[in-house]
Image 1 (tube, rainbow, N blue to C red):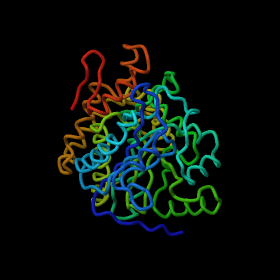
Image 2 (cartoon, rainbow, N blue to C red):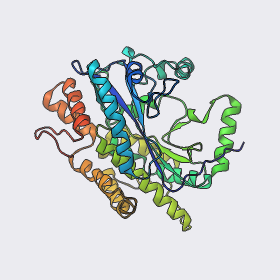
Image 3 (cartoon, one colour):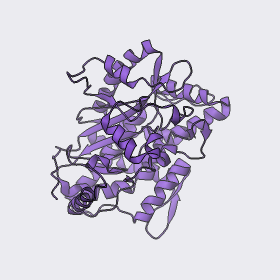
Image 4 (tube, one colour):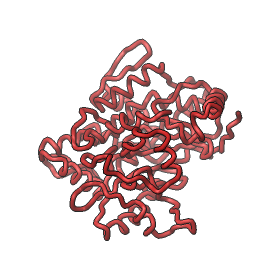
Length: 387
């Protein structure tokens, strides 16, 4: 089969941020997405909003940007939508927060969004879909043609642990510490067609893969291929989906900057005839698990022969390598937030610090609500940093 690619003019950017609806008093999730979406300004005649939409659970709203040229433009786009969402949420006693999962609310207490597609998904997948109380940040970056998609995706797969380590924000699940940095990765990974990309060498291989999947009835649409990095031919983008939802807009900007810089760098290297970085599938899969379990404290595999290095050191080197690209793309300030995360703690570390100091998970959600509202890191003992 032939899958057409909708070309993008340069490294255009789109961001999708799944945010939680939290009760202002109890700090538990509220099942009010349909109510809030209906109250938003700017609804179409069909009742849909161009920048905000349902996710699987009624406790989550996905906020999306338009096609942006810079990270600053994407952040400004998100800020306008979030201001509207906060305005309609406040009278209902709802505040917003963001993390890969909610620390306390049990998935059994969730209500599904009123969507035929989601109903069919749950009917097909059953229990793994019913417990899918997870939130993420997805970053799209444009490419000029399909021939670049698979090499760039395979190169991005090398850096999945870097992106996950910086964003991991889900150490608690249904009221318990799971011992993981990203519980979301394990919960979401129970679905079919998830995980790292398959290492397909070129676009023809992807077309053949999709043809077989569709003929077998394994999937009905390319949207059911939920890899950590996937091509999105309708948009003409590669979509990076590995990141947990992060607590602050500053960290969303950081993720967008990292991904935009890497895609632009790899695209430029292809123009120059360079061979892009790649790793054996076992290395990619093992590194994802290491970051899922240990976050930034992971030791990751750095080549196919089994050499290892601390992830913190590898993230530091990546940020340093991307700084010249970030200056060209106008996102150096957003990229620099990664260095702050290395210094002050990734979201999962900040949550555990609050929990160990305060002793209860309500305080963890309190901190997440503050981080979201004030766009700063809440650190135990000093009242916060950043912004």
